[in-house]
Image 1 (cartoon, helix red, strand yellow):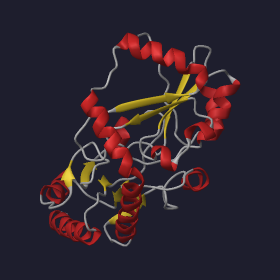
Image 2 (cartoon, one colour; image 1 turned 45 degrees about the horizontal axis):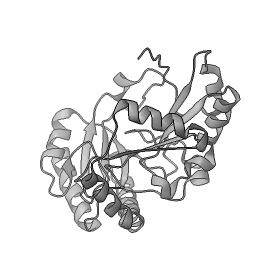
Image 3 (cartoon, helix red, strand yellow; image 1 turned 45 degrees about the vertical axis):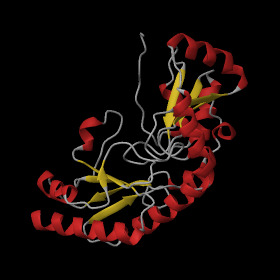
Length: 269
């Protein structure tokens, strides 16, 4: 479609003004960032964008509308992978887009022209999920924090990248702008290679390997060489990164699962 893209450091804040060009129409943000979990200064980015008549679109899937009020912080278009926390049961694929009144007609026309639609059955499943979203998020948050604090004390862990932790870049923005967290976060190991992390992953009892998240079941993935995928910033951590989605299982069972995983990991180091 002839779209040009400029990637930016998620911690850029108001400095994003320096990247805005004559043909810039949209700044697309996500907080926290996928995998590495940086929290961006959304109000500062939005203020800079609007000075140049640029719109801000935000993927707000992680926080959901309950934990981050996008329109109160300057965002113009809010996008959610409803498949995740909104549906909540890993049994439907749903996407939502919401916008301010000024852009609603354009959004409707684009949606019609592109052929976007949602089946009645998937809409029903998303509405079912909305009924329990608040109480599920509360439990995901509690379980996630318990496991994140446990991980912080593990000798294998370099640091935890959870927005509620000071070790997470942009933690101060999360404290200022967000009202809660959920079960998705990452942690970085001090060392490790693929054979060790493979042994770690392959024996999990409760954590399943999967890219999506937001359902009641816990998920785990490992990443090596994140720096290869970055063009706007570097990545200084030398050990692999592990991303967890902490589900609704008993957190003590999940901790026991991770303890066994670390045993397998250490046997291969």
